[in-house]
Length: 198
Image 1 (cartoon, rainbow, N blue to C red):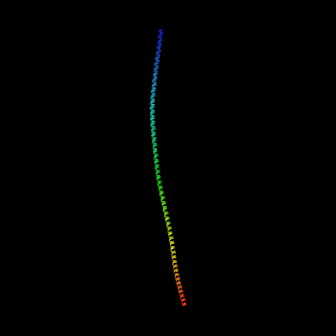
Image 2: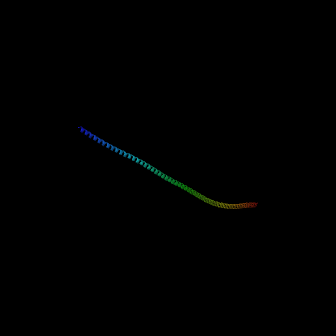
Image 3: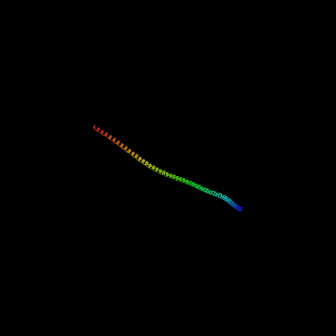
């Protein structure tokens, strides 16, 4: 019984020792696996950090590139806008100059037209004055002719009146002489009658 018990104890100790050894091996393996995992995780962290730094660097470079491109584009656009503004300014200046030329031409044309009208008006006034002068001369001639005619008529009338006066005077003298002769004849007749009566 003791031997059996002893054998059982030895068997139990043997099993326990095997179990401990097995547990130790498993623990060592587990430790090894854990260390490997820790190494992998550390490597992964390091890799992730490297990748993160690279991504950050790439992002910065991309941002700098985009900023530089944007600055360049903005500069090009600003230069184009400046060029367009200069072209517009040139166009406006040209338009102002053209408008000024047209205004001067219009003013010149207006002056020429005014001078032409003034010359025409002067010419017309001169013609009208000459016509009026001619008409006045004609009227003067007519008046002179009429006056001469009136003078001639007046002279004729005066002459006729003088002749009529002469005739009237002669007639009056004749009548007076006739009356005187008649009176004398009557006196002679009366005297003769008186003589006969005696």
